[in-house]
Length: 258
Image (cartoon, rainbow, N blue to C red; front, side, top):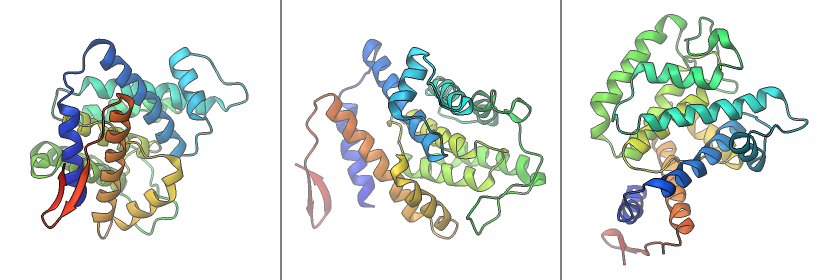
């Protein structure tokens, strides 16, 4: 797929800049903490702007007139983001990690359901497909974790990350917060493979939701969408460091770098 060739070319350029250590690593983590927290929450209707999210999670300053829940979502998503980075060297994602990511994010919203699977049926508004039944959640999460840790090497890392997000969303194991945990899991798998977090801006919400719905039958367009978002992260990162983007040319053999 064309996207994967582009991804690999940009990734090679980024890898040449490694290792990222000290203040550089801190700046990278802080940059994506704000971006991922804001975009992921905004996709779910959180009212905070990107600048308000930054002030709240970096400076601890509350935002006047904003709902308390919106501020909890930002602060606690940032905590879940920090935990995501503790998993960077594990090269695995286990059930305990999934539950803890949700607990961190949801603890100040609904303590009873934070870090535990739902015991009530739910449905995705606007979707024609049901999510997992309550009685099947445990076994399906266990199956997902087995797939994560035995099958990931069969895929390109970005393809795997997209499919992981899709599979988790289709299970929908929690009462609320499934989308945000799904994106955290996707990005956990990306950073474990040396890739940057992939951000989905709220302006693309309708396309994102539509492609997830279509992924029930054919996930190729959803995978391409996530690949595009990762490419944008790579390009933005190189621009931040004032590194020239590799020039891509199309020839009969596909994409190549000048």
